[in-house]
Length: 122
Image 1 (cartoon, one colour):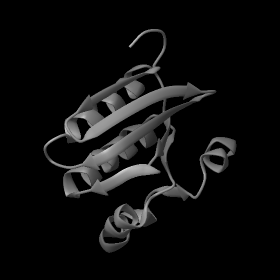
Image 2: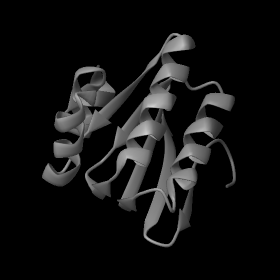
Image 3: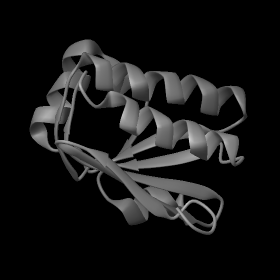
């Protein structure tokens, strides 16, 4: 990655793009997030925190699958962001991913937006 946080990282079925938007880091995972590749997302979220971004917007519009390991990565990022005075905002969850959050009750602890513009404007 060069300059700031713009860049991508990936492994097998998951790609993660990261870019800055004002005071927020926009993290865009695409593909399938599971126990085989959750570290790819974890590393990008941790890097954003290390760079001082406490407000993370996770654009899930291209995330096709998320298992419990992926959910735990996002929950951990949420705790770190909140401890730094920020938060994690989820955007555009597809029905299979949204269902995981609904079943576990995790949708109640995240701020969830339908559109990226909505999340970035908040």
